[in-house]
Length: 419
Image 1 (tube, rainbow, N blue to C red):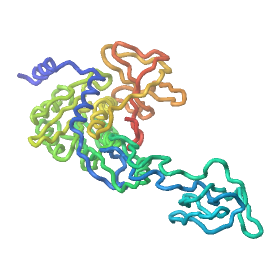
Image 2: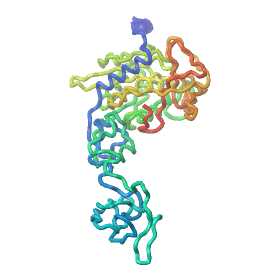
Image 3: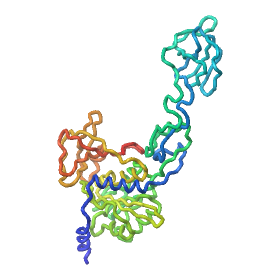
Image 4: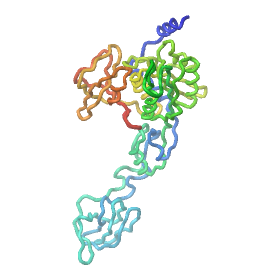
């Protein structure tokens, strides 16, 4: 059978493409089923991970009555005789007599017996050194448990760890966090026609995905080292099989660029067959980005790894990232299935018939509107560079002005909670 005949037969035998929403749900489910193991990480090393158990307090917050201001902790009515000073970090003696006071600093423990705290800027001193003034009617200190009670759940399993969470965990008395191990990812760039330096020329184009995809993967919580990016891989089946097998040795997810169709130098499908992979999704009814795929490999010991086939056209590849890779990684990290925000279309966006259309848009967050951008061909990246995400135009519809549509956000910074 000729190469052309074999390719045609493979296309005829291929299943119909999965709907975009169905594909997204399917890959999230397989990712969650293969969620990565939990590990303990010091707070300083936990940023970008995901909680594998709820964050709870080890003590009341605050753990003791704490002054909110600099001033005077007083007992009874004034004027008050000064009998001491309380600084943060010390345990004060009780105030046992009416008419006495101690100077107190913000954050210091309030002495037992205190009836009020007088702000320093609202106090005066008499000739004999006593303190006078009128305390405010509301307490000027924080009560134990005002923020949280000991053992209270503050954040659920699946919450991404960011600097704010780390600070909260430290205030609760934690030194480490139980988190999901971050996914390890690799990227294989397919295509003999690609250049890795300099401008395109003489029929060869510059590889735009090799430098860009690892950065996207890191923003979705992956670890990607420079040595995990390989290519261009030669356009032969043995070279593809060897490259994918080598990448899978250390990676939970291997992304490839190009080769997702059935042309004469498209070797990804035969490679997956040779490695014994099974398809989670094989093509998606979405434009751009239709020939995307996700495959799964399960070792004899039960270890699960994934191969995400991204189309070779740059914007189509990013559509595959947001459609398949992002929800897969959410599942692997034990995060919730991300809900998509909504925006109102400020301009019309055409539909794509039976396909979902992911249209690049810029968001006006103040107005809640989405504005289509220009230069959005599947081989173009100019529009992507100025966009905030993709408006989702469902099959059989068109995006009319004023329509409320889901938006798939693009992650802007590592660990940002856009998913």
